[in-house]
Image (cartoon, rainbow, N blue to C red; front, side, top):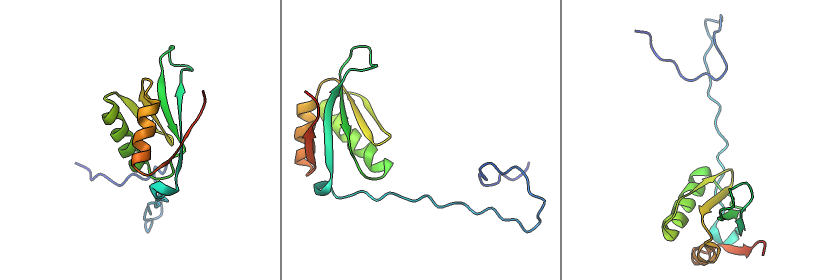
Length: 114
């Protein structure tokens, strides 16, 4: 059985006998402290079949921290959702509850929209 090699991206084969694949280091985004972040909370209905979702935008930090914050908010509201691409989606209209929780955590929260 052949040995598994490291993921070498798009490289398939090298004829250089001294070639060594060097992994690129990801530039990790450090999370800014809660009191220095301004998060925008809104209700969104577009492209969602008429259902409301609470949208939290403006988070600065790593994807892992974003997912942890999203999980906390979804747990507090008792619903599902997702956290990706710098925004958190909480299923349902929980804008006031989400704003209260974020304020308790020390974030600066701005109500966006009507």
